[in-house]
Length: 318
Image (cartoon, rainbow, N blue to C red; front, top):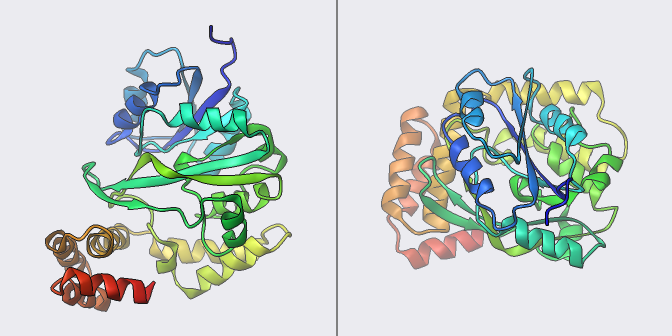
């Protein structure tokens, strides 16, 4: 018998997500663990997103609509209204495997000393076609704790955590633009144990409309600022926020987003899922966008090498 208040809130913000939101919603509603509320925060969408959400009549769905304020603002709004003891984060262009909630819930109930769990992920392109499997930078608590400042060890749309722990940490920092989740995990790690499952619970969809897929392409100064903020116990200053926004806005164009998408996918078809023909298709697309992008030409040369040699180069670079 289900409790009146479900123990899990699946929290999904969305902004102009009409292309993929039906796939995302279907994957949540098909979970083998069924006792949850599905809280969707419509962050001021201007397309057909709201109409698609309202076409579903599952009683577990709760739709809240607010003015557009960005993902951190939407998530904090959702946390304030979530009724579940546990939060399962999810994004409106990704796809959950059916047993995700069941396995995460069982783990949390068996391990109450854990405050945050995630998993590896299968990455797909905009059409849902498999690209590669991402293995988390750390799986055990010890691995993650030792690497927390280097790179974000969690995929945001698959994390699962007790709501109160995150609220006690101040929720998402509105000034930590593009790495609000990473900064939050730094704080959460001080509260207990964490881990990533060595299996994929979701498909993460890459598409040209997404924000930059790899923060390293934002440049040296952005990475310096992020590291400084992650390692500091003081609030983000107005000056640092202003500089972060200047860097992000200078790169927030359709051309740069598409360039980042095609280069990222090309690398994965070279290094992780050896399909050189597909890699070259994406490299040609990136060259059309930016004819003097030297990395694209270098990767194009790599694509004609034997697979064994490409792997050797990859591991040497890694």
